[in-house]
Length: 71
Image (cartoon, rainbow, N blue to C red; front, side, top):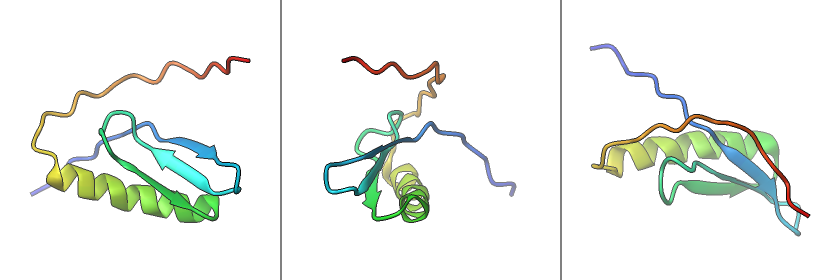
């Protein structure tokens, strides 16, 4: 059986303690954190896999449009 490949948009931010926080808007509750970008990217892949295993709802992919920072 061939494994299905899904693409998700991952939002990565850095908090006041310089910890990276990543979340996947398409998967409610799918987020993680790490001290480095490499670490947070590895962890978000794991989090996505776990969310997909636990998520019985249909995933509705969104199209990434862009980012707007409001001041």
